[in-house]
Length: 64
Image (cartoon, rainbow, N blue to C red):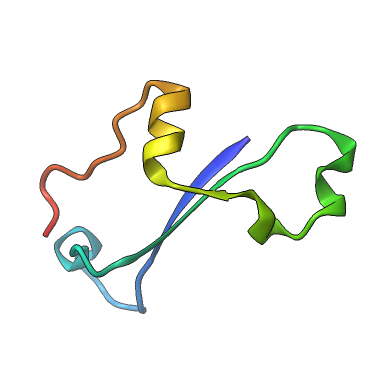
């Protein structure tokens, strides 16, 4: 299982507020019963790693 979280303060027009300085958190967690034994932060990876593993391009071409 993987997730990419874009951290933005409360507001509107979110896409226009994403910049190179926007905080992004990416995690790749195995789908097993033992995954919860580790803190979520131990599963942090780069967005590039998720893109490589999934074949998805998660870049926001219209952002920033």
